[in-house]
Length: 140
Image (tube, rainbow, N blue to C red):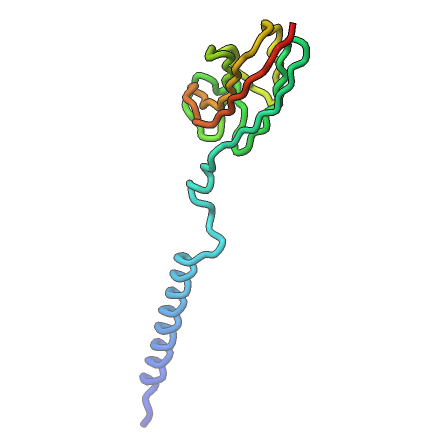
């Protein structure tokens, strides 16, 4: 007489093997994903700064081209948020302005030669170490 027990065991064995394979494939899918989110180092790319300037009369006109950086007047004097902050403007070594836009005019410079430094700053005023320095001549 034939028993139905071996048939039942075959189905159980099949289901067990099927579940093991399915779990294995799911684990492999979780561990290896070609569409992973960017790492924190990708998100924290170094900001860049390019400054174009013109002297018109006694006024210095600045055009600031920034990448990986967002101007934030609302967050000034608060915690650092990487990629956010403002610009410090130095003339002859003295900080004369904080800039929160891509365009800025510093008015009424005295005649003569001036060293200008434009520097990216964190919300708490720490430097990013990204700056441009150049010399201008203001005529009388």
